[in-house]
Image (tube, rainbow, N blue to C red):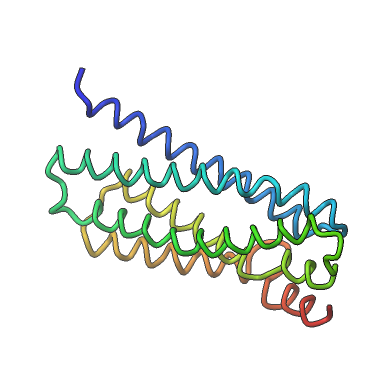
Length: 189
C-alpha cells in the first residue's frame, strides 16, 4: 500500500471533521446569541475552545495532505489546487479573530464581576456571525473546487463568489440581518 490512499482518507476525514465543527459552531453561536444569563453564556462558550483546536488541526491536515497529493499527481500547474489552498488560508484569519473573541467571552462568563451589558454586546458581536458565514461559504467553495476541478479563472470566481455569498448570508440571511437587528441591539445596550 502506498501513502497516497492513506492521505486521501485523512484528507476526506479532515473535510468531514471541519464540516462537523462548523455545524457545532453554528449551534453554539445561535444559542450563545440567545443567552440571557452568564451561566448560559458559559455553557455555550465552553464548546468553542475545544472545537477551535479541532478546526485548526483539521485545516492543517487538509492543507498538508492536499499539498502532498497535488504534488504526487503533478497538479500544481492547475488552477484549482492553488486557489483551494488560498481559500483554506483565507479561512485562518477569520477563525483566529473569532477564537480570540470567543476566549474573551468565555473568560468574562466565569467572572462574578462581569457586567451583563458588556457581555451581551460581546456575545452578539456581528463579527462572530460574519466570520462563521464567510468561513462556511469558503469551505463549501473549496469542496466545490476539489470536486469539479475547474481552471484558474473559474476557481478564482468560485472563491470570490463564496466570499460574496458568505457576506450576503451574514447580512441578509435567515432570522433577520446583522445590519438591522444586531447592530441596533448593540446600540440599545
